[in-house]
Image (cartoon, rainbow, N blue to C red; front, side, top):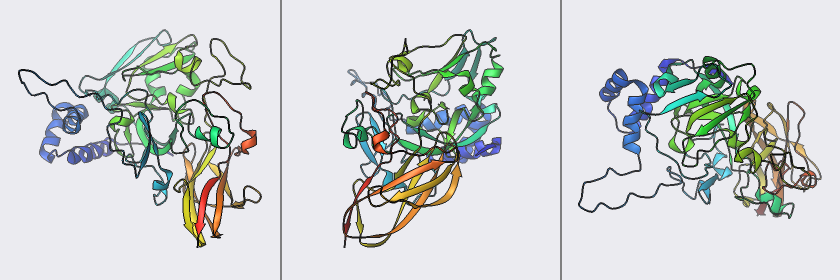
Length: 419
């Protein structure tokens, strides 16, 4: 789902953010007139910044250490995984469709940076463009906007099941299925920016680089960069992009692994030769007995995600005997969801679930399944099929890899029924 976004809507979203931060309408209008969106956001960020204003004292205390995650991450919503946090999927049971920012998982490699939007710049450079380009935040907001509803998912989503279902543990954070979220993203098409910079016909790779402490970067093909729904986003679900999710701007590369959705982007390099960095040679590649090395990479590079489905239930879940309705999500990197089936007897028999609400390509669909719950232990196993014919497979067909990427097999969700 895409649409053009008028400037009036952007101004209303800015006003909503400004009002939330305690700014008066008069101050908002004054800032908007004097400095545009950048000035408004600077006023907002200053009010919500977790970094205290330094007070002159003879022996100032050292500044607090940067926080890996800035937004509240209560246990009721999230499962902590070191510097990352997984959404508890049950929080989406009564939601209409999109994942609210307050529930959206956070995957980072260091800590969330707080970037001064007044001095932020986005540079597009490299031998793959005719004329390097530099944009301020206000420059970015003045360009024609595009809104897309798409999912973002960590490549390691489902990694824990290599251990619990395959009995072959994999390295990394042991996510279940909550490293997934679907949101409405607004920004500027990356293709439009590359055209403004005069992208050459000989260009091969495009690599965004983040402004976080580790300068996380990962290349993509020119073909992916030029897709109409690949955007540099500055809004999420109708509001200003939150700090933990990439403010001031981030990449949205629909259907590709999460690492390609670079947050806090500050530079985009366009190259006439393939680009090799740590994130596509040592990590975010398949390493294992089924994956021969592809020098200089240790194995095949990850690009597209896989079809998945999940129950919006606690893990494990407890249900009361009798008629029950379970809801969940299914998503595909290739298109829309065509069908979700559910088994309650270990995969022996599957029955169709009902798709509900929006069904958006590269975003997913909600589903509902009703059944007669009988006392005892059971498992609810959903199986998704997309409109291109891609279907989730049995656990026995899942290939293992050292870093536990792209677990796409059906997952039986444990349930205890009491009556």
